[in-house]
Amino acid sequence: MSEAQELNYESAFEELQRIMSALQNEEISVDSLSEKVKRASELLKFCHDKLRDTEKEVGTVIKDLGL
Amino acid sequence: MSQPDSKVYTLLALSQSIRNLIQEKIGNRLFGLKAEIAQIKQAASGHWYLELVQERDGNRLASIQAVIWALDYEQILAKHGPEVRQLLKAGQELVMQVQVDYHPVYGLKLLIKDLDLSFMLGELEKRKRQTLERLKAEGLLDKQKELSPKVVFQNIAVLSSAEAAAYQDFVQHLKENEFGYCLQTDLYPVPVQGSGAASQINARLKQIPYIDYDLIVLIRGGGSKLDLDAFNDEELCRTVAEIPIPVHTGIGHESDWTVIDLTAQKAHKTPTALADYLLDKMAAFEGDLQQLAELLQHKCKDLIKLEDQILLSFWEKLQLLPLSQIRRQRGEIHLSGGALVRLSAQGLRENERILERFQSQLKEQAPALIRRQREKLQDLNLQLSRDGEQQLLRIQKDLLNLSERLDLLRPKRTLERGYSITRKGTQSLKTVEGLAEGDLLQTQLHDGQLESKIVKILKNE
Image (cartoon, rainbow over all chains, first blue to last red; front, side):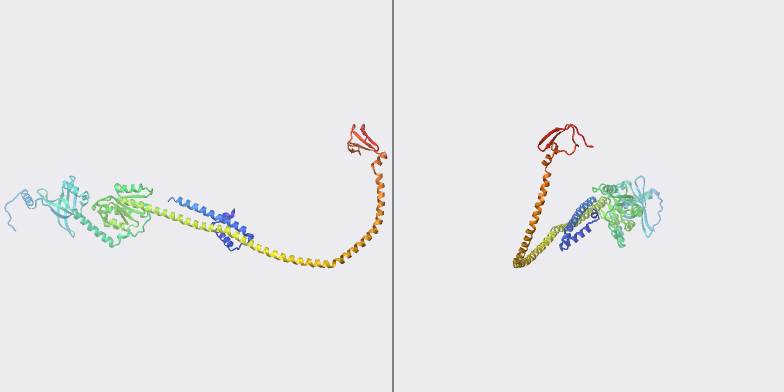
C-alpha cells in the first residue's frame, strides 16, 4: 500500500482531525459517511500503531545508551 | 696600651693558654646562634664542615668555621627527622645551639650541637605568608579558579616522581576503579623534594602541551612543612597561576596548605583523595546522563500518553458520531414518510370523488345506454338468424360430400378391394429395405390374417 508508506504520523493525524471535526459538525454526507469512517479507522489504527512502534523504539534507544 | 711582656712563649704554650682561657670563661656552654651558611660540605667521615657568615648589604660582617660531628648529626636527625638534610645548604639561614671550641692545631671553630627548627619554621611561615600576599595582590590566586570548570577530566598530565609510592597509589587507584572508567594519565617525572625541586617542577610545567590535557596534577606523598617547602616557591606558583588548564594538587598534608595548593584550581588532601575526586566527577557525570536519559524517557512517555488519549477520544467519537448522524437522518426520513402518507391519502380522496362523480353520471345515463345496446343486439340477432339458415344448408351439403369421400378411404373397403397390409411385428411394410430371408411376416386381409416366411427378396430395379 504505497499510500500507507507515504503516510506519517503528522499527516495522518491532521487528516484524522479534519475527518473528526467534519463528523462532529455533520459536514459529511451519508453517501460518503461509511467511506470517511473507514478512512478515519485506518488513520486511527495507523497513528496508534505508529505510537506503539515509537514507544518501543524510544525504549530500545534509551536502553542502548547503556546508562 | 699595656707594656710588652719581655718573656717569650712557645706557640703551643700560647695556644694552650688561649684554650684554657676559653675553657675557663666559656667551658661547654651552649650559645644560641643565628647565622647563614656560606659554604658547606660533608666529609666521607660523615662530619659536616661549614662556613657561617653574617652579611649586611653584601658586606661580610663576620665569619667563622663550624662543624657538625657525625655523631651529633645523627642525634639531630633522630630528633628532627630527615628533613634537616634540606636545611644544610648554602644560603640557608640557621638558628642553632653551638659550643665554642679552640684547638691548638685546628684553631677556633663552632661545634653545632643542635638546630632550632621552630625558628626555621617561623621563618618559613613568614616567607610563605609574604609570598601569598604578593600573589593575592596580583590576583594570581584566583586565576586558576576562574578557569571554566570541566565536567569530567579524562586526559591528565601527572607531575610526580615515578618511583614515589604516592604516584603509584594514584595511578593504581584510578586504574582499579569500580566503575570501569578509563582515565589517560601521562607522567612528567620531577623531583618532589630537595633544593632543586621547585625550579625543576617549574621548568617541567612549562613544557607540558596544555592542549593535550584536561588537567595537570601534582602528586606527592606526605611530608613535613620543611619537606613541602618547594611548593611554596613563588616562581613555581606564578607559573601555575598562568597555566590555561586546571591544575590540581594531591600533596599529602600533615597540617596546612602550601602556596601552590592555594594557587591551584583545587587542592586535595592526598593523592588518593585526588583520584577519588576524579572518579566521583565521572560518576556524577554519568549519573547526570542517566537522569537525562530517564527524563527523556519520561517526556517521551508523556507525549505518547497524550497522543494516545487524543486517539482514544477520536475512537470513541468515531463510534458514536456516524451512528447518531444516521439516526438523525432516519428520523428525517420517517418525517418525510409521514408527509408522504398524508399527501397520498389526499390524492386517494380526490380520486374517490372523481369515481363517485363517474358513478352518478353512469347511474343517470345507464338505462338509455342499456336500451340502445339491447336494440343493437336485437338487430344483430335478426341478421344472424337470416344468414344462419342459408349457411346451415351449405354446411350440410359439404358434410355429405366429405362423408362420401371418407367412406372410400376406409381400410376395410380397401382390403375388400383386394389390397392387403403386410407387417413385420407391428411395423407395416412399405419397402423391402431392412428385410431378410427367413423373416416372419403377418399379412392382413379383409376377412383374416396370414403368417408367412420370406423365401426370397426381389428388389425392383
